[in-house]
Image (cartoon, rainbow, N blue to C red):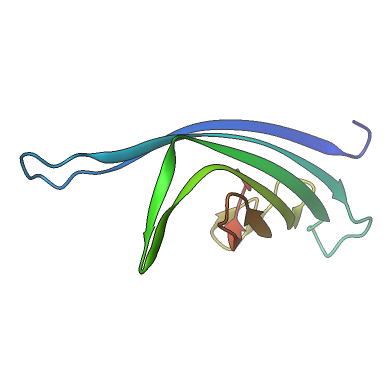
Length: 125
């Protein structure tokens, strides 16, 4: 839209812990990830490189809730997490050394008592 590029993305993930012992319960969960990123060129060039900046929002829904054990505390159940991030890259396809269309980003992820900072090298979701 104009000079803005809007990207939407979805993902479905599954993770499990299989202990290979009879009589043990498998621990597993699935997650649905939905995100949006809005990018805009910064308005200048460095040789053939046209830098841009992007902001993103991602929602993660875990089913069943992901359960994390904690030493000396009750397990932490995580059902929903949210992430706000920023990325820097190229407004037009480019190549940097061996990387096609390089992007660097950082995001803050939070929700259900669990938070953290995530670095991304490429598309944020």
